[in-house]
Amino acid sequence: MSKTPATIPADYAAWLAGIKTRVQAARSRAVLAANAELIALYWQIGKDILQRQSAQGWGSKVIERLARDLREAFPEMKGFSARNLMYMRDFAESWPDEAIVQQLAAQLPWFHIVVLMMRLKDAATREWYAQKAIADGWSRATLEIQIRNRLHERQGQAITNFNHRLPVPQSELAQETLKDPYLFDFLSLGDDAHEREIENALVRHITRFLLELGSGFAFMGRQYRLEVDGSEFFIDLLFYHTRLKCYVVVELKATEFKPEHAGQLNFYLTAVDRQVKAPDDNPTIGLLLCKTKSQLIVEYALSGIEKPIGVAEYELVRALPETLASNLPTVEELESELGAFKNGDEEEA
Image 1 (cartoon, rainbow, N blue to C red):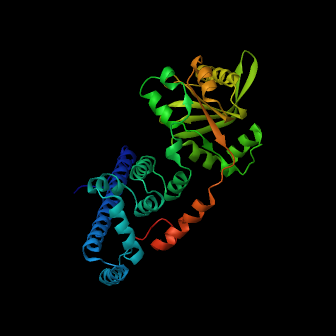
Image 2 (cartoon, helix red, strand yellow):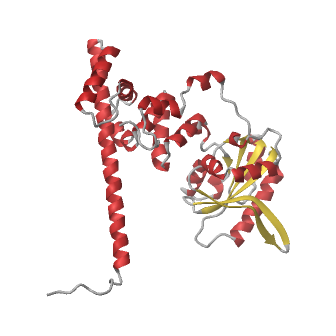
C-alpha cells in the first residue's frame, strides 16, 4: 500500500506556478471566445434588422416588440433593450464586412464598439482606434480620452532625426511613439506657466501624463542627477520605454524652440548612454517639449545632432468647440443607455 509523502516535493512550487499559468491562460481564452461569439451574434442580429428594415420598411414599433419578445424568451440575458438592438443595427451598418468584424471588432468589448460607432463616422479612423485599443489594452475610458484628444492626428507627428540616427525598425517604432502636439490641459495651468511649474504638475498627475505619452513609458524620476567631470546636471524627466528598450530623456522648455536646446539635450543623452544605459539597452532617445517651434529651424538644428532627438509642442490650454462638446454624450450617458452594471466593469451584453 503506497504512502503519502511526508514532505512537499522540491519542485512543487514551480509545478503549481505552471498550472496556475495554464489555468489563467485557459480562462482568458474562454473569455475572449465568449466575447467573440457575443459580438458575432450582435452583428448578425443587426444585419437582420437592417435587411428587414430595408425590405419591409420596419419602424421603431417592430424593434420595441422584438426587444420585448427576446427579453421574455431569454430573461437571464442582458442586452436586448430596444436601444441596444438599435446599436446592433448601427454596428452592422458601420462594420459591413463580416471578415473585419471577426478579425478586429470581436476582440473588443461591446461597449468599446458602441463608443467607436457613436464617436467616429469615418470607417478608417474607427479601425485605427480599434487596433490601438486592442494593441494597448485600452479601457473604454481611455478610448474615450484618446478619441476626444484626436490621437490619430497627432501620433507620429513629432519632428525627429530618428531615420538618420536609429536603425530600422527601431527608428520607425520610435517615430510612431512620439506625437505632436502633446496635450497637458489636465494640468489646469495657464499658457504663461513656467517650466518648473509644468514639471511639478506633470509629476503630480503622472498617471494622466503617462497616458498622454503612450504605452510603454515607465517613469524613472524627475530632476535626475548626472555628474560629469565634477559638475552636476539635472534632467527634467527620465523614462524607460519597455518596447523601445531604451531610456527616454524629456526636457521641458516654456519658450519657443531654440537650436541650443538640441545641443543641451544631445549632451544629456551622451551622459545617460555612458553612465546609465545598460549594455543591452538601445541608444537613449531625447524628447524636447517646447511651447512653439519653427519646423525649418528644428530640422536644421537636428541635422547636425549625433543623438536621436524628437521635438514637439505642448498645449496647456485647449478648449473643445461648444457645438461639438454639447453633441457628444458622456461615458455615463452611454452606460445608462446600455444598462451597464453598477461596477462599470460589465456592460449590458
